Amino acid sequence: MISGSIVALVTPMLDDGSIDYAGLQRLVDWHVSAGTSAIVAVGTTGESATLSVEEHHTVIKAIVDQAAGRIPIIAGTGANSTSEAIEMTHAAHRVGADACLTVTPYYNKPTQEGLYLHHKAIAEAVDIPNILYNVPGRTAVDMLPSTTARLAELPNIVGIKDATGDLARGAALLAGCGDKISIYSGDDATAVEFMLMGGAGNVSVTANVAPQQMAELCRLAMAASSGSEQDKQAARDLNQSLAALNNDLFVEANPIPVKWALHKMGLMGQGIRLPLTVLDSQYHAKIETALALASITTEPAKQTTQTTAN
Image 1: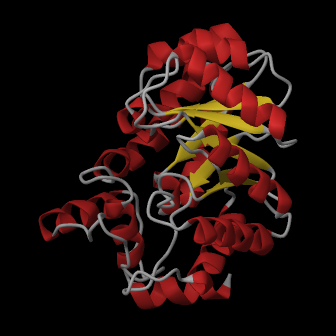
Image 2: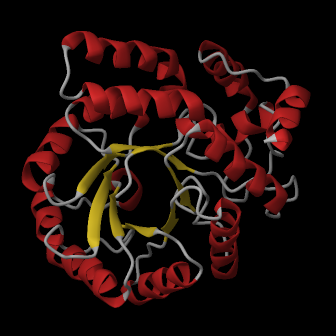
Image 3: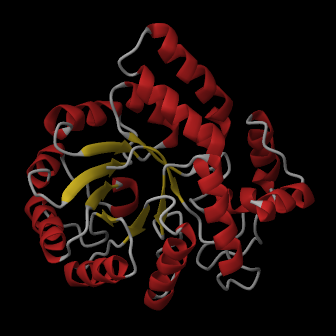
């Protein structure tokens, strides 16, 4: 259904922490013109954990409205309560989201059977394509490939974002259910190798600041997965220019570094909500260097003008 570079979009905020809807609209337009394949609205990078339920719905609607059918919108609708996740998914479906992204229930540590029944209930309750999201580093629960394979048999479940960064895990998913659902990387540092193995794309933090480069990387890597070693090397060479960003955008908890980078690029204010804080000054030079290695300018006036023009 969806493949390529899928940006896990930030939710821009003003310095007082209020949502910057005008900035959000500009970011959507920028990604459309940069060749991003799809947008994840209000996922982890979109600060789903700090938005109110009402804000969650209004941000998804704002992104859907601004995209206006030009690019698929995947709404983050996961929760650690099954009934709440169903409610969030219904709301996203009503405003026209193309798919939903449902994270494994965090904190309460369900069993594998609980994970299966949770995602099954969502898929059966709302007529919208479901993309599963496994990120044990955030949730303290790991959905095993065998559970994913069971869920892949359900008609409404169309993909999984695997954010383990474990290529052996990716290979197991591709082998076990890659013929039934799309398998996406959720880890920028290993995404190129995952796509060269046959992955359907990358749900990316780095794409927030380097949308054109990530779109081209995904195109190259997915085309090269069945190509020659020379084709694969071309994808790896492009990935090298993004390697510092792929690592350094996680020097503090996501989305702290990527929001500061976008602020430095002049694309939005530096607003972020507690308990998250603005990037510590000790990391500023590191992020600026990573941006420079990817040939990304940090001239605010120039970038803001370009973005507004788009």
